Image (spheres, rainbow, N blue to C red):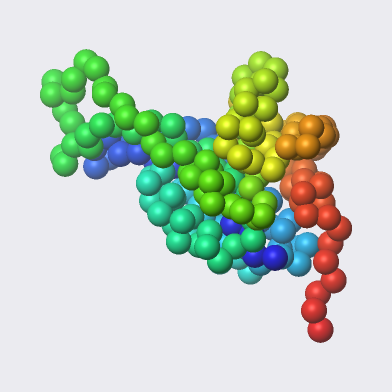
Length: 210
């Protein structure tokens, strides 16, 4: 099976040196990519900027902005059997990016933002019988919002986590399935969580072809 994985944050430029982003380290997405490779799957990893070394064996596509990530995902989705969207995509971007560095005296007191495209929802609209899995980072309980996203985006499953997971080596995940099933994973290291998650979504490890 060929799986499209998104990972890391996106950066939305304000000017040539500043951008809007978030605290995502990319660890969870990279761990999922490694776990899929270990399970015998092929992986296309579309990644925002991180300080991580890409998993050996993955086909890596590097992007910065949400629109670049969407374009890359659309290009590869047609040849993939599943998508696991782990990336922390910026919901908004500045309406206009300045061509030169903004000076303190030049900066407007209000920053106008526009919505970025919903990458996973865009892909899932054309999934057919393919598997579409998302991640939802929510504060508080978050279950109700995660269920809303699962149904609204036409997903097969969604993984709920919290703000403390960003940049951390460990996390606790809650897997929600479209059929109503739920499973709690962790707390554990993200590498361990990724292997458990892959087993839940894709079944036991496949034997390599000889």
